Image 1 (cartoon, rainbow, N blue to C red):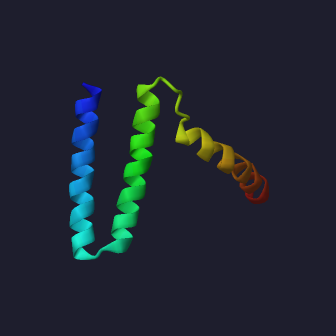
Image 2: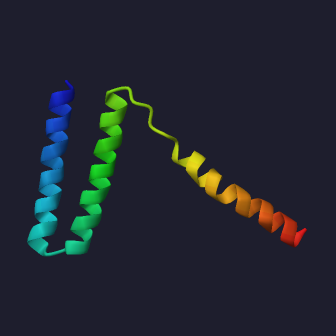
Length: 75
């Protein structure tokens, strides 16, 4: 079942890449390919039961010290 889904996704991505390549939209092609690669990596990790970190944890790790700084400055 996973092989069929993966093959279908590869065909779908190939059609999208072909359309962008034929139109000469290089920046869009790069963004599309990178986004697709990230999505397929996450799906593969999930499929093999490898824990995928939550992006909100990283965002809160970065912005929590800034939030405390702003509270001290503007309180």
